[in-house]
Amino acid sequence: MPAPVPAAPSTRTDGGSIAVVADDLIWGERLASLAREAGAATVRIRDADGVRRTLAGRDPRPLGAIVDLTARAYVPVDAIAALSDGGLPVLAVGQHDDRATRLRATAAGAGTVLAYGRVHAAGAATVGAWVADLLTAATAPDDAPEEAR
Image 1: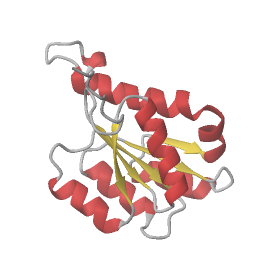
Image 2: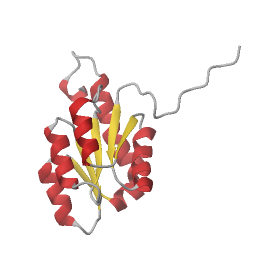
Image 3: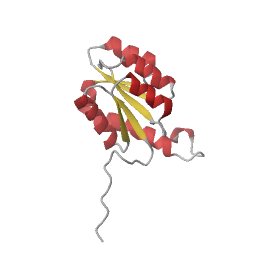
């Protein structure tokens, strides 16, 4: 009997999925790839309706969201506010020279805001650590110390 074929990395995880909110196909795939490398499945969202649908009824809900701040198909700061208000941790990425937008993203609820250069230089480590923390918290037993949840 032949060995079973393993599932693609984006179809099953130990702990959950990460919503990747980006309207640019290539950049969105780059962000999704970083989340998958860290062990998470990904849910791609390309517009404001997708953000609303994710918050309204996705079961199970994503563990967190990565939001591209330069999108045109949605208002990035509004997407961050909706996701954060909906209880999702948010990591935002944007232009290094657009400090005002990065500050608005933080004010809207993004817990981490990275410049694109940081994602290009150390994305696997930086985004990977953020995703790994979410996966660890999601799979920690209820009686685990708070820092492990």
